[in-house]
Amino acid sequence: MSFSGSPETTNHRLLLLHRLPRFKTMFLSKLRTRYRILDPFDESDPSFLHLSSSVRLMLCVGPSPVTSETLDTYPSLECIVGTSAGFDHFDLAECRRRNIRVTTAGDSFSDDVADFAVGLLVDVLRGVSAADRFVRAGSWPVIGIGELSPLGYKVVGKRVGIVGLGSIGTRVSKRLEAFGCSIAYTSRRMKPNVPFPFHSNIHDLAINSDVLILCCALTEETHHIIDKEVLTALGKEGIIINVGRGALVDERELVEFLKRGEIGGAGLDVYENEPYVPEELFGLDNVVLSPHLAVLTPESMEALEELFTYNLEAFFSNKPLRAQIEYE
Picture (cartoon, rainbow, N blue to C red):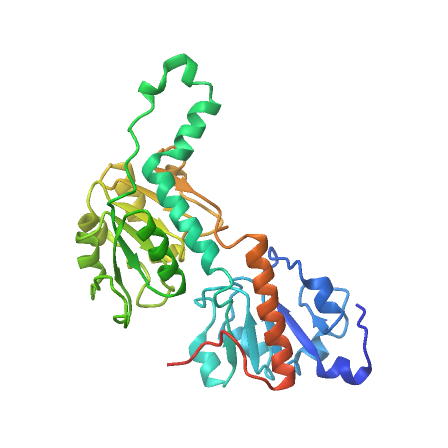
């Protein structure tokens, strides 16, 4: 492994790359020009074990879990620069106990995820993906569109409940207002200067919504926040859109509701056991599936690179970090 720089620079600018084996980083070549990279999956680096005990900065690629055991492995760690909008993969209690600062992707993905959430909703309501499959299968000239059912539903006028009116949820609300939807929300607390109705619990929001869009973080409190009771409250024509985290939804219950026709449809970008998706969903035309790619655009990757590059440099320059998690 090569590094351009003096020995003093090399020792000072150690950077631990923390990732799952399947996660790659397109930024690695640039990082190597500025830092001495320590990658636990790089078996060609004989100095990893020696240097890892003194590394102070970690770049966490995607939602790679950072547990107390992970932190035990790197006792000198002072800061974790994250590249994911969520933070459920961090043991934040342990990071706080060890006085380790943690950052996220901040707003890097917010516009793209909001766009995707709206796209999923339009697709589910209007049956765009189902119609595409119908045409590609050659069915139109054979059986006509009369066999393409059910008809799609209007977007305008839908009552949309947003679960988590943060950076992404706020952007979703602005987009759907332009579609003529009425917006309500639930969040950890009522937002100041927000004109939309606030519901203190998700059950009440579901009763008063045609659509629930999940934009909140995954925590102990929000795990399976969409359960049997909420799905029942949403009703037979209700729609679930999830661009948050898979475990926000009791996936087994959602599958059963969809199979029995007890909910109108779903647009899912995230799942409980990624990359595995329940096969029962594959044949349902009222379900739109995507492989956790709402964040992936060239523009979002550019914004992410700018943010984490700043944070890496800020750490070594003793400057304030951006998108730092504030411990409660």
